[in-house]
Length: 139
Image (cartoon, rainbow, N blue to C red; front, side, top):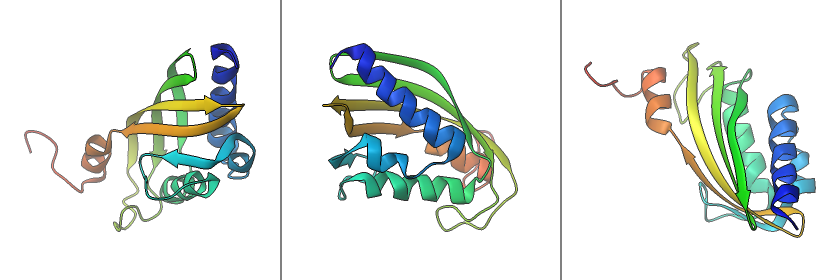
């Protein structure tokens, strides 16, 4: 597949995940042997559904905005800004009611029209600071 076709698959993944919180899209677009290196000891679409559930349960109004998306060969890189309000528990913390904005960068590997691998970088430091779990610099 071309880099443009791979970009379209990743765009669709985020459009359906972000706009509709459609966990079922994972079954369609994620390879059965998929590895998300955020949770590397599990494979398949269920891994992505687990991650989606973790974030959307804690931030039901979570929205992501794609800031950059580019591809070369079978790799697609996406930089997003996520925004939402913490209305559910997250990482064992009770809901704070705080509005947060944090970034992620994902590098996907797309094979035969399916997302086969994901190397996400989540700005957890900023997220946890905004939730009050760890102090921000200078505090």
